[in-house]
Image (cartoon, rainbow, N blue to C red; front, side):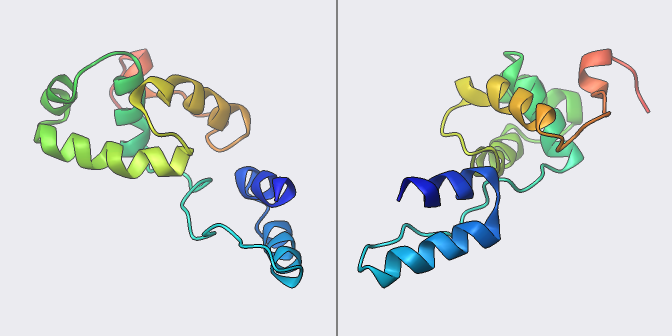
Length: 117
């Protein structure tokens, strides 16, 4: 069970599938593997996540992008499962981990630098 969870967390889909197959073979139940963890964030999601992690409210983020605060909430709703987190407080660490793991290597966020384009 622990191996399956670890493979899923690492995004090693073939190994997770193999572990799930072995668990089923011995009669264990296997958690739902159709999650979005490990999926890369879109550029807009990345910017919104970084702003939310920096402490801005949904309303403040919405004003920066000229969108509704509800749209920001919808983006965050999509971001959390992609990063494997359940709270806004965990955004900062999850973003650092994703960058360190190479998901967005070499990309400097416009939100942090203040540069447009």
